[in-house]
Amino acid sequence: MTSIDVNELTKDYGATRAVDRLTFSVRPGRVTGFLGPNGAGKSTTMRLVLGLDRPTGGTATIGGRAYAALDDPLRRVGVLLDAQAAHGSRTARDHLLALATSNGMSGTRVEEVLDEAGLAHVGGRRIKSFSLGMRQRLGIAAALLGDPEVVMLDEPSNGLDPEGIIWIRELMKRLARQGRTVLVSSHLMNETSSFADHLIVLGRGRLLADVPMQEFLDSRSRLRVRVRVHASDAARLEAALSRNGYRPDQSQDGGWTVEGARAHEIGALAATAGIPVLQLMDEQTTLEQAYLDLTAGAAEFESAVLAPTTRQEA
Image 1 (cartoon, one colour):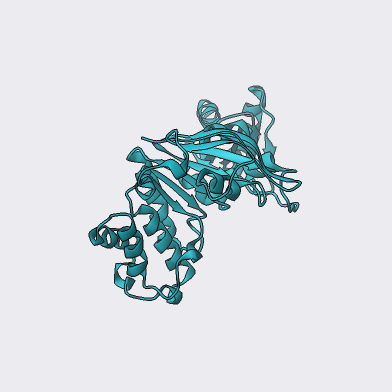
Image 2: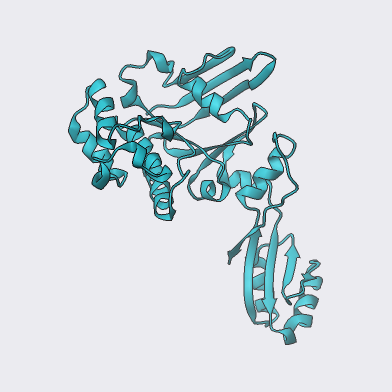
């Protein structure tokens, strides 16, 4: 299968450097989340990979070749950059047929992707009557038309309802399982955490992270456990924790937070002391919080907002 390879990629617009010597690879068989604040260079980088802009320096290739040099590019790379780009006076079916015919594909494939995108029943409607979510589905259908090895999607969940979000999430995972290369740009951190295996994070045009999702979260998480017991057992729990070198902190709701521990460790300690546990969970930094921590100072517009942690039951 085919990878996307970026090497020392640079793009200047006058005195502004939008992309600054980026080097990374997007590998097959996994979904790569492409993250960064507004103005970080994500869209510019995707346009450079697709030959829609010319780089000031460096290279961007797909399977070792520039996009413009690919044979049958629609069969090699499927792209969603702007769901509003389709001509509003065409029907959804005609829009896809025009793409298919110009690339030597059959009308059968058009019907397949309309069905895949959940648009088969509205294929005869004009695109200008479509909602934002329906246009997104049509853009994704167009990206899938050539059954490509590489799929690049910019904000694919934009405008989708909950059912549509679940559909695109499962679609991306399935494409990766098939060994395809999947690059997805998104601002939705919680959604990205549900489908991405790997992360590439930009800030002010520079590479901030190129790392597996779980490694990214682990590197920015503190070990912390939330535990709750009966009020009558609180003193015994505190004593048991203190004897084992922990410094528990009791919250107003009666629960305890234990820094530097994992749930199974605290559970074993409570069991040894004969203390029934009502609640026990690891607390891990969310992707949103880890992302905000990494990109602090790299955003064009910043506000003092902290993301909550996600609690995971043990």
